[in-house]
Amino acid sequence: MPDNGPMNDATQAPSEGLTGEGGADDQLAPSERLPVAGEPVFTTFGGARGDAGGGAANDDANGGAPTQVSKGGKGPSGSGGKAAGGAGGKAAGGATAAAGKAGGGEANAGAAGASAEPASLMFSEYVEGSGSLKALEIYAWEASSLEGCELQTYFNGKLEPSRLALHGQLARGEVQVLCATGLATMLPLACSRATNLTFNGDDALALSCAGELLDVIGQIGVDPGEAWGVGATADHTLRRRCEVATGHSDGSTSFEIDAEWLTLGVDTFSDLGVRNCAP
Image (tube, rainbow, N blue to C red; front, side):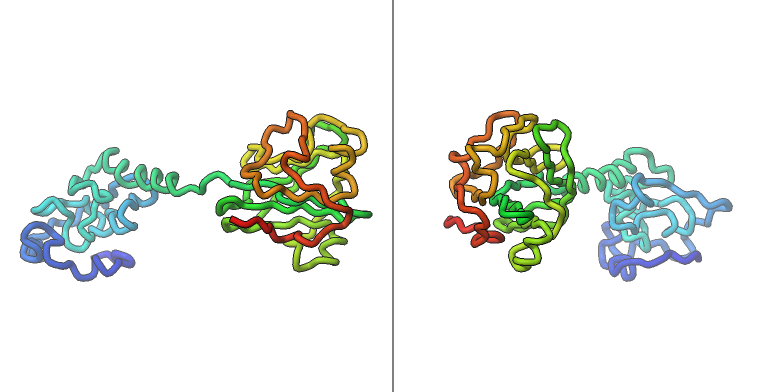
């Protein structure tokens, strides 16, 4: 007989009832087995190798012959009793699209249902310090992936941003801190990633994931002069107020600093890397 490939524990030793109502007594005796077809016949159940039941239900398990149905409506001994991706014992040699739907189609639907939830992120601290000492802290309200997210910098009122791809995973309540190289050297424990941050007080910054704006500092397409909020975004640290529960996702509206941010002095780094908000 042809090599059936690796089988899991369930296919190596059929238990009582695996092949039908009568259990092991219903198995075909060797002399009663169907002859192997002269030309191998392969039946497709949908998906990769018809793998709806963990990869065991494919025609190679029957020596190239079409899958047969034994009494009790389950596959023969040796196929794991799960032919046709668990489609209720309706697998047969000419399995049709219905079996394929039970196999690959439902498996694909399950994979789609397991996709990650949208990222739940916002800026929680902004540092525009002396010289090139700059940082941005990103906070996760819920466990979130940063894959597919980016920092967008809109210089001097431009509508097209400079983009920096973000990476990593954040658990609920964790932060990732992007620091200019000079600040990362000074504060290696506070900074998660050293990168080229070149924004100034008059530039708008946006946090975007999967093409959706989650949070904006400033107003996109507007040049405020030297800074937003009567100088607050130049040579200052901004810390998000604890009562703020979501990002400012509309970049076309005016930027109201006092409603959402605390304005601190230049080169204030004391809470960078930690969001101290009591529950």
